[in-house]
Image (cartoon, rainbow, N blue to C red; front, side, top):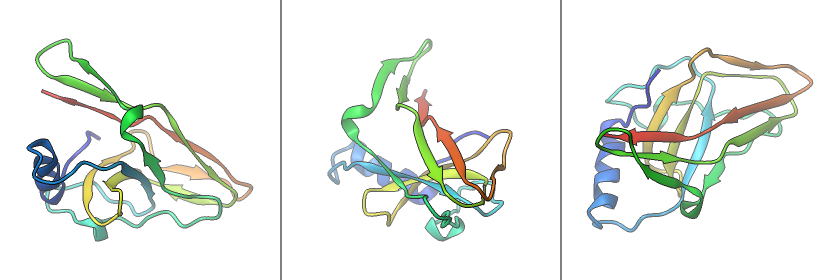
Length: 133
């Protein structure tokens, strides 16, 4: 599934792009409901993982790499983030919020998912990134 910025996220990202609001670090969350991202989504469209060991990850601005794309546009990439669980969980995808976790910016359903963490625990790795054309 392709990454999607719902209307509420596109509005906030546009505000940041034109310096209408100050940029902040963003947070990467994993979700456990079987939901395909849609334009009308809001934060409540996603059920954040709550299994033992899980915590949302702060993605710091300085760790993003921005490069020119092979065609017009730019590619934003972030180092791989590892989520560690100490209990079972089924994860369908991820979503990104502003640093206060109040505004949904974008989301993506995992290709090849859902991923099932066994009762003994395990890890899920996500490499955030996107291309603007």
